Image (cartoon, rainbow, N blue to C red; front, side, top):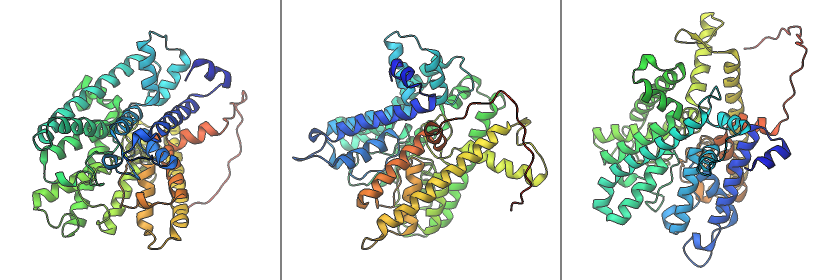
Amino acid sequence: MPASIRNKFNLRPTQVLVLGFALLICVGTALLALPSATYGAGSISVLDALFTATSAVCVTGLAVHDVQDTFTHFGQFTILFLVQMGGLGFMTITTLILMVLRRKITLKERLIIQESVGEFTLKGLVKLIKHIAAVTFFVELIGASLLATRLIPTLGFRTGLYRSIFTSVSAFCNAGFDVNGGFSSFTAYQNDYVVNFTIMALIIIGGLGFNVLLDVFRKHRFNRLTSHAKLVLLSTGILLVIGTAAFLVLEWDNPATLGPLSWPKRVLAAMFQSVTCRTAGFATIDQGGMTLASKFVSILLMFIGAAPAGTGGGVKVTTFAIIIMMVGALMSGREDVLVGKKKVPRETVMRALAIVVAALAIIIVVTMVLTVTEGGMENSNKFEDLMFETVSAFGTVGLSAGITPQLTAPSKLVLIFTMFAGRVGPLTVLISIAARQKKSVLNIKYPEARIMVG
């Protein structure tokens, strides 16, 4: 976004980020609505183009049209470009362009970069952007190379290489788009260990956050990592183990999912489901065929999501961990929330609470709206499937119980907003809309109000 426009309207960093993502979505919508973007004589509707572009930029993966069956190579390349742009982030791409053009990065732009990548200081931000780009393209190249060893022998060189690259970018960006056709995702590769573990690795690495990846790369040893990196790694590991165990127990004898598989393949499929619920959106089992309990576990994992400054969505693992630790501190009579032997600042705890409350409010309202917009149809969708769709959109996951293509126009519009809010963050959206009050010069203290809760 040009500096003259930012200065003229005096936009805050959060507003620039929101408008930047919105601009990308508008460009993507215009491109995907072109007749050359789809097969056949006509084109998809503007609403469906908007839905697809939003899903791609917000690295969600929900699709009203199958990518392989509906979109031409031009349309698929557009989706892949939007996914890469959305995964790296608006300001990361803008900074890289400015660096190529040898433009100086202003203080205002550095503040916006700081907001977008979740850094605490302005020091070394431009260098960090270079590292983010390098890590992204390196990991995606490795992922595509590993996938190519399995896809090229079965699909041929051109098709196998193309699908390997598309899948690697989509997986690292936690997008969930695939070009396998028929809304099948990766169910055909349910028993392929190389494909499964490569995609899972890409999802996890992309979801950890670039600052955590760089911290691990520089320091190597766990005890030398920052408190943030330690919390992200521990929380991610615990959630992946708990998710895998839960899906194994709940789906073990389900004939629609894990039932027909041998026990090693059941473990593999359960592990993949636990990983993909962390905002990736790929699937090796039928999401609509899962038990109600498994859908609820998936909803919880999708709500939590990945780590801050990563390519995933959700309220973030650190937010969830801080809330849990806050409850533990209250139960043990401690005033401070501790990570190891360090205290979490009070404003961080309050921000975590605000994020969870805002996220729950969005999910509740959107689910309620979907029950109205979808409830009047014959064979109306079940409540749990509508909530599954809502949380999947908010968490930018992309998993679906199979109802996305049948959604009504009002439901699509509501989910477009939900995906957008989930990608840029509920607080970012609210802050960018609301006018912040300027801090008063006087430090006014108010009397305490005694209110009972619980």
